[in-house]
Length: 404
Image 1 (cartoon, rainbow, N blue to C red):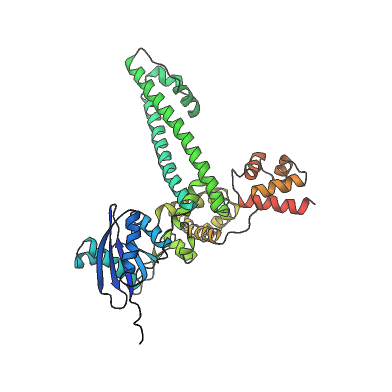
Image 2: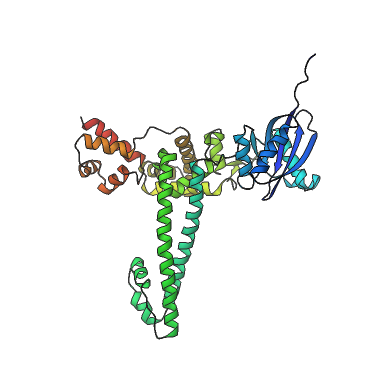
């Protein structure tokens, strides 16, 4: 007697802070086989896949909000060998027609997977990129708070009593902070409180400076370990690298091509044609922080990168505006970043360069002079404090050719 084939099912989960609601559908017919709620904790994460498996062999599970409420569940399902698909919330048309409830949203997530409308792989969130992302969030907030404190300090100084204002006038900002941190009390009630306010802001700015430096050092170290070629790419600093890596995730293979990455970063035009009119418009969506990172790289290269400056001159002569040129450059940079992360080139490390230099008996200053750079730049490269693919390649090439 032949055994009937096992029923195949597809799951969907509507995630929340305290409870996840799961639905299971028959993959062949689309019929809903059940809906159940599970606590958003480890016990619930373990019970949910077991409940799904009780209805048949699980093809895949669509999970909403894999970057927030559903992150823990997604990691658990992936570790258990269950295929997880990232699902967007239902569109407004579906909401109007079907209504809104947690069971309805869970079924909609499963149907999005079953229909093939949802195909995205969520970020794994279990590696160094997730650690970098956490540090960058705090560093971004500290940078914003530091800027606000600096603006408040300068605004207070403008309206401060004349004696106090003249005492700090003409000094560098760092010197103003140094003096403000040591302000003492004053007989005049207004000047006394202004002094206290400036001292408080000066200490806050100094604390945030140290905090930002510590966070950037950690981010730089982790980026050098996770993606050394990216860290050494021209125009990429700790914040830019963190934003780009956060967009890619710990599993960049989930992004199928450099074109898909460009679309994720909103660095590609969107068709806006109709009838006999053929045109494109800017992409207002995508990951805006990743888009800002590409913009920062382009700005740096337009000022300091010789090949980019030559490209800008050529395109300007062709009649392109500055904004049009920057859009083209962002697309090129998106391609470069994707290839650097997914297929990193073999770039010598600072440690390798230092070992080869010492073996050849060449001093750091002599090699720096040969490369026409300041010795401190080469020193930071060798110590792993800075990353620069071009400089590392130049140094390694010179040592290969001249240090017999």
